Image 1 (cartoon, rainbow, N blue to C red):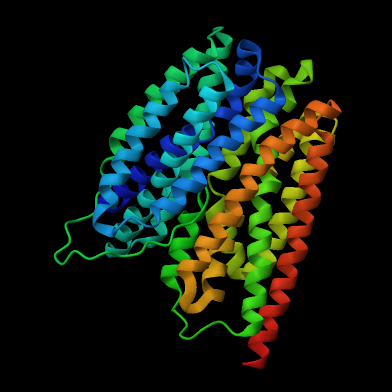
Image 2: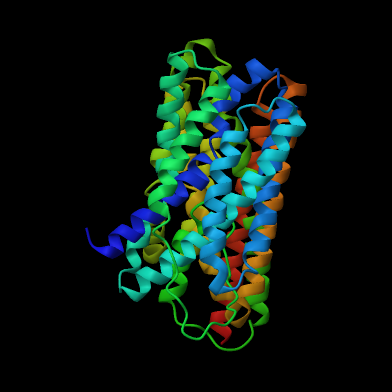
Length: 411
């Protein structure tokens, strides 16, 4: 195995541990936690929101870390992700669960940001930037492995606490090869600001695209600023639009008794579709332009969100899972790389604003979705709201494209 491939796989292990398990394991374990801890849907949503709050805070702090310190913080985050996964086992109250999930979210952000940056730099030095797609697949693979483990342990009547411990052990095993990711010593250490993406696999595609695109000098033109405003708004609302289904899809499946045997298969569909999604959508963006690719992905995701609750059959729920997993990580990637181009010389502040917007959308989604589902008796109302939001996002991206094209025509 060549060293570049080994580094890409190490990065994939890092994202599988910190994102696939540390961030997304809550979804397949939620039905068991609800049953054993008597968590209401509203409380479950607030705990999920706490994790996304931690991710936002972690992302905003992580981008301030100087380059010569990022290896240290990356390793600390790996350890913290394992520790917080294990710490979920004995926790019982919503307050304790939420506190742990805040820390887990912050650790996930550091792993995503610094692990991606370290791997990208190493692959760029080796002349193999496209190997970053192996790292990007780590999130989806982590989700898939988690689904398989939870299914096997559920069949063995394991408790939620036991499942958290087992997943903590798996995260620890994945963290071992991830420690291969280290920055080489700097001959002339100096602080370097790292502009970091906000979400699961966003860095994975945004960073290679940014590295491959020549920088554009000067400040954005008025049309570009308007395009960026529309794009940032759509990007923030994406955080709300995807996260309700991503948090509660296993609970939705469990709500129909004859589907319960398939709940982990549905979650696995999310992971399997997500693993290659960044690579596929970046190729699509290169062929039809990034705006059209995002519009298509937003509309497909809106269909997937509704299929998961209103399809009326298990195949439709699985289709919804595939459309969700196959779009939400890729939209973040294409959106961030497009925002960087529109920002010209202001990419750092722009990516920071997009990170914050996306994070706020994620924080609001689970709490509001759980609250609405508890009061209406189903996830139809919150899913309709999420789907409508995603359609609105597609329209906003279309407006951003129109403004960007107008700016190009007048240049």
